[in-house]
Length: 157
Image (cartoon, rainbow, N blue to C red; front, side, top):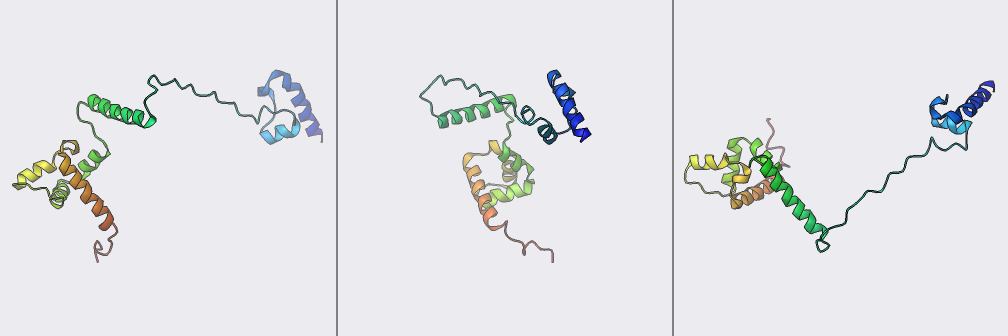
């Protein structure tokens, strides 16, 4: 009882001088000692974000996003000196050259000779012609659907 009274007196004495002088260790203790004192439980309010008005009101959100995506890719290409790499390029580079050649063969890419197929497989993803890229994407989607679930054929037993 004496301790509660001493703490209440300490709280009453410290209030005019600010919270850093309070001998309170946690919020429930403060609420018990000073129930009318709400500053410890309040969170500071965040100011509303400042959104500048659009200069061109005729542009929709989708058009603006598409325009910004195109600008982002263009700036990334300029900043990297033409060596821009996206996720597809990183995945293509992570494949061994033999796997790239295999994907090109399964995709139906016709090469006159093995060195020509090797040079096509060693290209960066962005340097591949669009038709070959689409064919490879189609084959990879098929592999994901049919080959990924296989487990018995991959067993070493």
